[in-house]
Amino acid sequence: MKDIRYTSAAASDLRKDRSVAKRLMAKLEPYRQTGGGDVTQLVGSTAKRLRDGDFRIIFVEDETEILVTKIAPRGQIYE
Image (cartoon, rainbow, N blue to C red; front, side, top):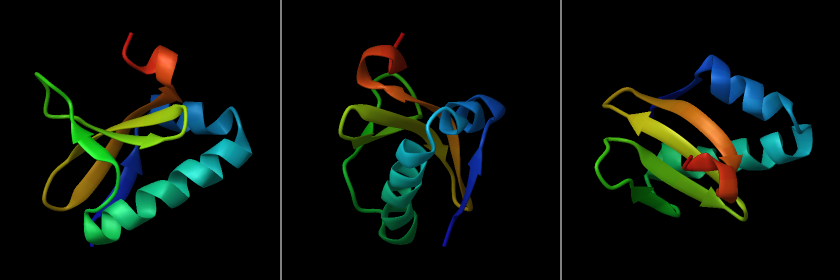
């Protein structure tokens, strides 16, 4: 099973709203265990996107860990 790490920017995004943070972290857990979920490879990048309602989690994955780089609402994440 892969480890999940957060960049300082992603951790700051999580601190903005605790209820949303719990929901998003719970959404990331099944992907960590099974690799399933609403995950899409971003075009022109090695990053992937996990969708949960209006929020998006951008992360980079390798053999041993998932590094979450950005968490934001849909309208702000791709800027």
